[in-house]
Image (cartoon, rainbow, N blue to C red):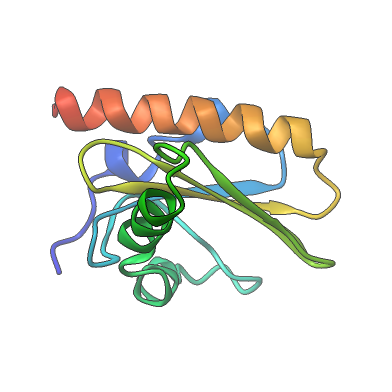
Length: 127
């Protein structure tokens, strides 16, 4: 896999700011197109995270269609350790936002919306 450019790696920095969060833009197969996901040792595990989530956007879209409740805008899962939020971006890509469980849910949703907007703009206007 080609190395991600610095502009792609830092795409979500303005949306995240100083909050305990990280964001990724994933293609339908789970490959990281932008952002980064560092573990506690500082190792980028974007590939592993993307692989675990490959196809999730299609599955959420399929579920929404089967339920007849319209297009999906976000999925947020809260756990004791973290909050994971997903949103559709450009075409079949998705934005993943992982936050510390101490980050307020309203901030998670706001950063997710900003991150999705950044991803859509970046995909439509590649540098």
